[in-house]
Each structure stands twice: as C-alpha cells, then as structure tokens.
Image (cartoon, rainbow, N blue to C red; front, side, top):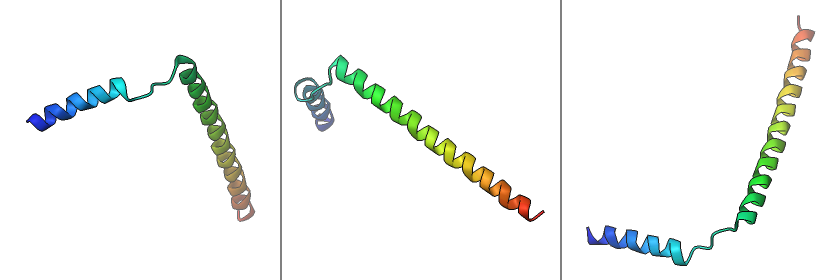
Length: 64
C-alpha cells in the first residue's frame, strides 16, 4: 500500500513542479488549429463521400 501512496505523491509533485503547462494564449492557438484541421478534414471526407456516391450512381444507372 505504501508504493501506491508514494506513486500518487510523486505524481502530484511532478505535475506541480516538472510539467510545463501552456499559457492561455498557447492553449487558444492550439484549440483554433485543431478546430480548423477538423473542419478541413471533415470537408475532405464529405467531398470524397459525395463524389464516390455520384460515381456509383452513374455506374449503376448504366446497367439498368
């Protein structure tokens, strides 16, 4: 049980003294980058889905 308590004490100490936390400005910039990347990737997937759907409809209509 002492090892578990020591683990939590050392983890807490490391979080307070050794971890470099981002500033508020860095956090906002990172959030904006993630949001923009998410929108771009979502748009790319939508375009690929839409175009493949249209191509498959065209192919299926040829065999009717």
